[in-house]
Each structure stands twice: as C-alpha cells, then as structure tokens.
Amino acid sequence: MAFPRKCPKCGFDLTGIASPTCPNCGTVDAPGLPAFARPGSPPPFVTPPIHKTWILALIQIAFMTTFMLLFHFPKVMMVPFVLFILMANVASLWLRVKVSPGQQPVPQRPLAHPVLFRILAFLTVICALGLISSLLFGFVIFMNSWNRWHQYEGQRYHQSEFQITQVYFHKGSKGAIDAYASGTVEGQKEWMNLIPYLHQIPRSQAQLDDLVGPGITIPIFFFPDLKGRARVQFDDGIHPAEVSHRDTMNALKYGSLGAVLSVGMLLLLSRLRRLCYDDAGTLYSVLSTQ
Image (cartoon, one colour):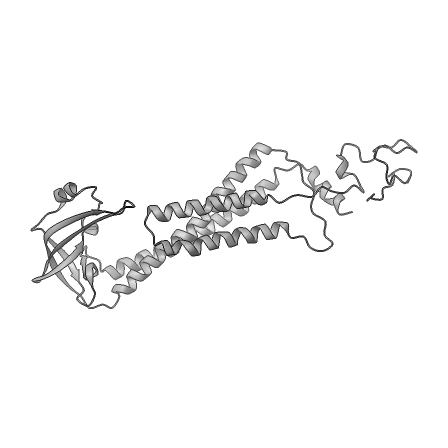
C-alpha cells in the first residue's frame, strides 16, 4: 500500500516514487533522515522482546528457588512465588504488546549511548531482582516470625534450668544442620534446640561435643502447655514472644523499605535510559503520528 506523499516545496505528488528527490523541482524530501522517518513513510514496528521476557522470568525463578532450597524453606512456599513471577511477566508482556485501536506503534529510536544503555539495562535487572527478593524473603521472614510470635504470646511459662544428658548432631540430606540435646527439667525428660544457646552452627559431632556436653546446665523458659522442643527455650533475658515480635516488625520495615528503594531505582533507571536515545528520536515519533 502506497502512502500519500507530496513535495514540501512545489506540492508535486510523490506517491509511489521511491526516490527521496522530487522529479519536478529537485528538492530532497526530509534530507538527513532515514527513509522510514520521512513524511508518509510507514514507521517500523518495535517487536517486543518476548524471548527475553521469558528468559528473565526463568532467571528470577531459578534465583528464588535456589535461595529457598539453600535456606531450607518449605517447598510448598515456592509455588505461590513462582506463580507470582509468571503473572508479573505475563502482565509486563501484555502491556508492551497491547496497542490501542487507531494508535500506531512508536518507531524504534536510535541509541546515542549504547554502552551506557546496556549498563543501565543490567542495573534495571538487578533492581528488579532486588524488588522480588525484598517481597519474597521479607514475606517469608515475616510469616515465620509472626507464627513464632503468636505461638509463645500469652502462653503459660516459668523460668527454670535444663540439665544436658546427651547432645546430638544431625546433618540432613540437603545440608541442613541440627544440634539438639536431651536432658531433664525439674526431673522430667525434655528436648532442647542448642543452636540459640551456642550462637553458632557446629559442623560435626566432635565439634558439638567440644562446645557443650553432659552435665551442663542451661537457663531456660519452660512452656508446659507446648509440645516437643518448643517447650524448652533458651533464656537470654528476653521472652521468645518479644524476640519474635521484634523480628516481625524488622522484617516488615526492612522488607518494605527494600521494595520502595527498588521501585525508586527502577523509575530512576527508566528515566536515565530515555536519555540514551538520540534527540532525533522525538522527531521520529512526531512524524510517525502524522
């Protein structure tokens, strides 16, 4: 389909003429601009980088899955976050390919600073990962602390002592390390997690034996209405509910702060990326709408 064109000087009909020079008066049609930017020429369509969108989604899913496996989060928690990443990328892709009725796509603009543009694009990906990490891990830490906070809040307890009978070291198939002990509390056999007391993670049974052993007495909070190791908690001077409440508020505060900073950086980088285009790009957009 030929687009109507006229010579800007003499008005000669240039429709169907490939040459930019008017055969009537010799005027060059829009000199210095590429063919697609001349009045009447169809603008090239910007093809959304669909494959790059899904590659980025796979990178985000791999990053999230690796982190959650390394820190032994429940596998069931991975499902909603994978769905969230997929939905976010589908929404982003839909917004880029959607064109309103009667609206022409914006022609591709040349880059004046391609190296700077690539650096800013890389920083944009980093900030996007930072945003996802802030939301993802902030939510996980918040929920763990929230559950522990309400587990101990209002529970009947008293301060006592835990006397160690034997210590145990266990390393799971995925590298998870557990150090615990059996002992007695007021003549009753109980179990206790030793990690909060040790303030470090032992790497072997021998190292655990060097750190703590039978006969050692540990101050504790004893919760008789709970079960398992939750009944015995190391007494470091702060009630477990207070510690969990503090961790919950910190996760909410720092997670939200990280998300806000990431969004701010994404907006700033988006503005900076626009500066990497030639000034002539504005002219291309104007001409394409005529």
